[in-house]
Length: 354
Image (cartoon, rainbow, N blue to C red):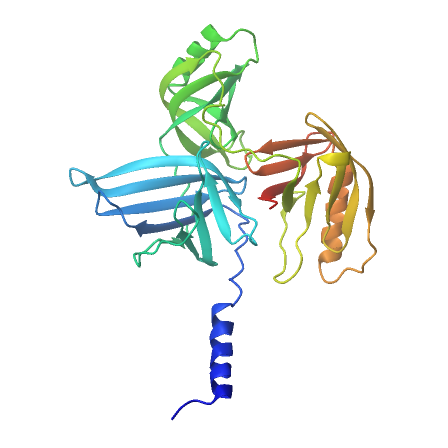
């Protein structure tokens, strides 16, 4: 029996509706989150990936090459910055240095799929998925680190090059060797010098009765590098202007967007020092004044559309943060808007305009 034309059209419509279904919403990452899985390996039995994404848009990745070293496992660590891409946040880009990013796609709320170097699905039927883990693996190391070090009054801070993260260094391990080399090389107190060492991340309270904070322990000191900077290693850094900035945190609270609603954003235009965007209920337009890191917004005009649901509270917090802004700082793909006291009022991530 030959199917009728109507039946064929109905079948085509059903197939089309299945293949064009909208992708699952990318999960919100309100806290550190770990994904893990085994993917193919050309020179070993398998490659086990453990990826932890942190709230400050840094990541750590451990690659375990199963049986690669005379039948034993070999490990390599990587760290850098992560950001969602423009396509609704369905893709994740990991940047570690100036090369092309490693890309993943959110299959669902529990699964990340590794993509090829061009950002496409692998044609192979072999597994490329990482599953979300119930426990966070902070991937403490040890890792070989390079960054800018400053020691003053027995307190040391380290700005790691690949992630842009600033972290305190504890006076343990080979810290004294690091300190001696720094003090004998610096030109003036408070100067930052490039340094290389093997370090381990640990969680300790900075003072008794204070919450845990991640800090660094120097396990093996290598050297300081007078005159060097992070430039050769630095990960990609977003530009403030002509970039689509999506807020992910306002006054310490994560920004959660309901499925099917328009997301807040800001775009700073190069020409005319104009800013435009969407605050949660209404579009906005206005001016800005930028001088180095100093940033102030001029008069901001908005439409008068009524808010629905939680949009009213989100929009109020959004405008409050903008009016308080006195400076900005970009680290990798993350933008911080800070008030006159240096407090971060809004944190945004970059999605590039096409």
